[in-house]
Length: 495
Image 1 (spheres, rainbow, N blue to C red):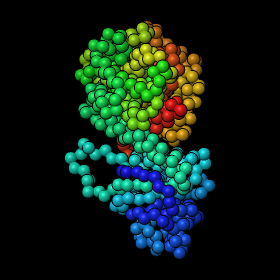
Image 2 (image 1 turned 90 degrees about the vertical axis):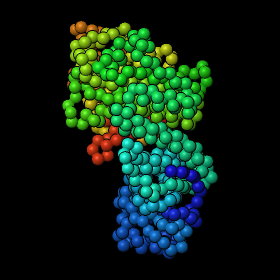
Image 3 (image 1 turned 90 degrees about the horizontal axis):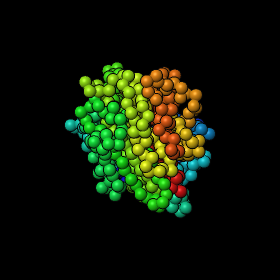
Image 4 (image 1 turned 135 degrees about the vertical axis):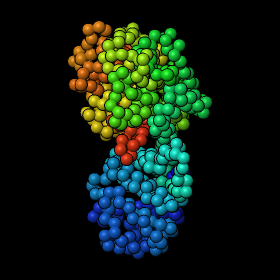
């Protein structure tokens, strides 16, 4: 879909379809009122008749509205005016794109971007309109033998602004939104691929391709190199798989050479059976999504590169499979991590922290300004927070606040959970420096406590995206989160 920014009013601009809003209680938005005046009350009559009551997300397509230059007018319900905030705005945009794709309109002008939102300027409204529109048009059908190529979907969307300053701000936001949307789509594609295609080697190949396309420095460490580094914890997870493990390291050198980098570390378990502590069969297919942390790092690096962000960013991805095999790690085995700390593996299905801890030790060499790891780490986080927000834990409150603010700005939110030392006692082991699980109580917190033992050299935050990285059921698929949060965090750091 092609996007553009344009100053104008709906009564003047010609297009295949003009999209305007209607609030509940059948109140026309200012842009709808302008069309109503031009059409001599045509919209008012439609609304009074009860055909459009303004219920949030409802739509009504009108043809040949008198005196209006656009071929069609799409009315979109905005809900109650006093409740019209970010969520309602996104719902209205989503409903618009869905209906436009159904109508066969080749192009449209979206006037919803002119609707005021508290504490949200035109740049935010434009950026979110792009992100929601791209997400609404996203399809993953490349593995189907037959695809619906005959669908006449929307090809061009003009986002309306009120004046020249808004146009200037909107054009910058458009560039940013398109880059972030590209990163999100890339993250979704990787997450949706099955484990027989998206292997550790495949992820490494995608990183190398990104490096060539965007001139990123990319290094892929293979098993002998991981062994030489002493990554015994990471390698313990990979032992049961025929797929060789990889450590992917990507550099975006957009800032001053003397400026310390931000490092993103993504969990890349391309398929997680649980290993010897094998998972139940039901819904195990969804364990192809256990590499969504890695996918979000790749998507974020893509977005950062497309934006040409003036910041040094390093993406690090430990990736392997977790499979049951005669050579697989057993419950009760003790391994030595790259840091030298020993770990008693009480549950092989708590494998994400085992690959992350060695990666977190590895990134010390970059002397980072901050490190953020992203992982589909614990079912306990899903129980605690559901599928709305990601879990956030950190060893520095200022870094946590940055990420929380970035989540609010991007509407890709997180929730700050405690990382008190009191929880560390649950990781005690009689046979090693620590156990890899701490029991059911506070499972998301004790998982982060485990990781915190490998992050004492720098400011660190952990995002548990187990509840937000994908959807189940009829809408099954990767969400692309938290690319929005991460890119906003990096944009703010670059400022």
